Image (cartoon, rainbow, N blue to C red; front, side):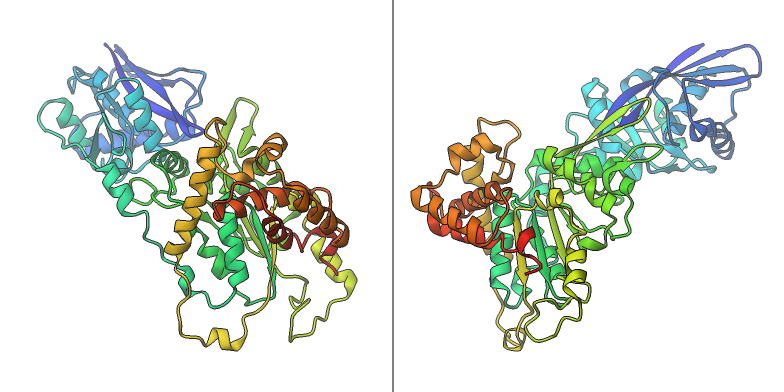
Amino acid sequence: MLIKVFGAAVQGIDATLITIEVNSSRGCMFYLVGLPDSAVKESHQRIISALQVNGYKMPTSNLVVNMAPADIRKEGSAYDLPLAIGLLGASETISSEKFSRYLLMGELSLDGSIQPIKGALPIAIKAREDGFEGLIIPQQNAREAAVVNQLKVYGVSNIKEVIEFFNNERELVPTIVNTREEFYAQQSNFEFDFADVKGQENVKRALEVAASGGHNLIMVGAPGSGKSMMAKRLPSILPPLSLGESLETTKIHSVAGKLGRNSSLITQRPFRAPHHTISQVAMVGGGSFPQPGEISLAHNGVLFLDELPEFSRNVLEVLRQPLEDRCITISRVRSSINYPASLMLIASMNPCPCGYYNHPTKPCVCSPGQVQKYLNKISGPLLDRIDIQIEIVPVPFDKISDQRRGETSAIIRERVMKARQIQEKRYKDFPGLHCNAQMNSQLLDIYAHPDEKGLQLLRTAMTRLNLSARAYDRILKVARTIADLESCEQILPNHLAEAIGYRNLDRETWAG
């Protein structure tokens, strides 16, 4: 007897339909084909135990199981449930009448309980695309998959529930999530707020400009000056995720297995802060079974690199291409996988090895050569992709002891959202372009061309401050954002002056 059960394989952030064909005939052998890996092959032992514990017998006939398409490698333990149901269907222990209407995935424990899987959301999207009536997955993944509408998602905790469901002995209750209600309810709940920051008005302004235009930013300052504190508060002033962005971000975290149990959509922009000991593969993604890296987990959010010079040079250099292309391609012998990587890079660093170069009160004990060597750890091409470079000085005592709260994140966020709306309207005819940081040279000539006074100011600044040629485009992009914050159509000299101020740490002037 030939039976077909349906599952799915996750490749990148999308799923591919897998048809599990089980043929039962005379004999007593078991064959599993279709390019399964070791974890899939081991499912045989888990299935035998799970069925025995729950009072069912493993079929003793000759069984051939094919996982089609056979040229895609099947990885992981999530195929346990569809394999078990297929085997029982082939031996006529359960009715196969409803098999074609449902897609199944889940890992089995030896007692028959069903463990959570990775990639439930892309699997649910694939099930809806291919016209399945429902999806049967572990209870812990049900809310995550239930954000997909027009699909019945059943969360199960034991294989017995699934067997009884197919035998029409039990009704499963679909998991229902009010996606929009949950999404909008959680968008403004932030742990950190800019109202807690004392002083540092110029840095707060720089972060507001960065958030408004999607610009990358680096903060250079002495230990304890508030670099990490302010970076952690940046997501609270970024524009809220759209429903589409939220779905895409959730898919990436689902594939990586980073979603919490019983969670549904990610409602806030991601904030990833990897330690400086991170490897290249962990940063960009990959591995034996390719997984998203930190730059993809930060998609639509913020990647914060604290103590930037302490990161391996190789790790920093692999950031260059994704920051420019806003995606990362992981190539292997058999396949090539694309992960999105549209993010804001926020970095912080000390000005020198001891940390007190240019400090107002503490002396620096580093020689000029040591300072230069420390700063040279950040390569020119990487620095070229950072639009705003700002120096932070420690907060004086009278500011620290001031009990008054500063401007809240909600107020700053309103200004940021207003500026982003102007940009969305401006770039509506350019697909994939959402903010000023993504402008190319042609668009700079159209939307960010300064007047004669502005050009003269730029010329003077380039000469006096010894700014590099690469700073020119960055200054114009940031000036365009500052003008948008003031709802100004034309870039004025004062906008350019502020943007030039954010390049004071450009390569040639860092070591004084």
